[in-house]
Image (cartoon, rainbow, N blue to C red; front, side, top):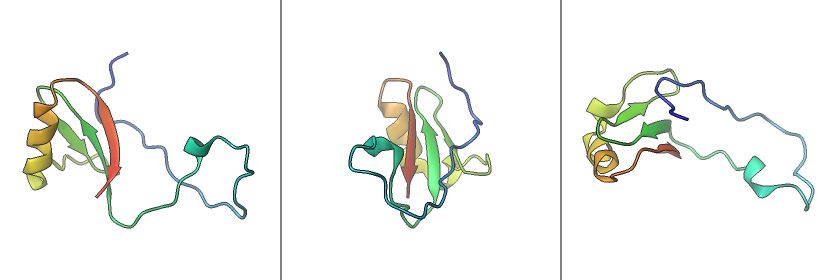
Length: 79
């Protein structure tokens, strides 16, 4: 399957209680301060903001690192 930008984001939602001890840990995470970026790696990397804008020109060092990985992947991160 090939994933191309822009994509629809999976957004966090508020909860009123912590998950039970047996809950799958990857389904829950603490919200970090900062801004979120989807990084599409490969020969022509693309850094997508939550509104779909190209953040590559503003973050050239991350764009270069994404190009240097040598694999195609999508990385979801907070900066």
